[in-house]
Length: 90
Image (tube, rainbow, N blue to C red; front, top):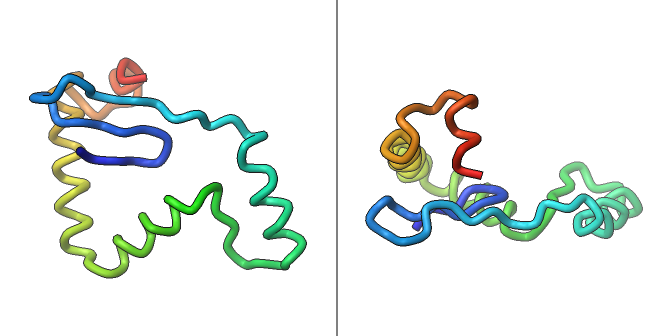
């Protein structure tokens, strides 16, 4: 399974290709307000995003491999990575 911000993409051999998460701004507003009050430099919408960033910086080659795999899965599912085609995933 590959997870991207806002969605979970499972390889085309699995039953779930994409599951959209709730990206309602009201859910993130407490994090944003808290970050502003603390004068944080980087304010993230939810803790998972921080983990995504840490994984990316800890092993960049592995992250690139994951992005290549994600791209291949999207191409298998909709035929391209053009936005006009990718919207079909949602």
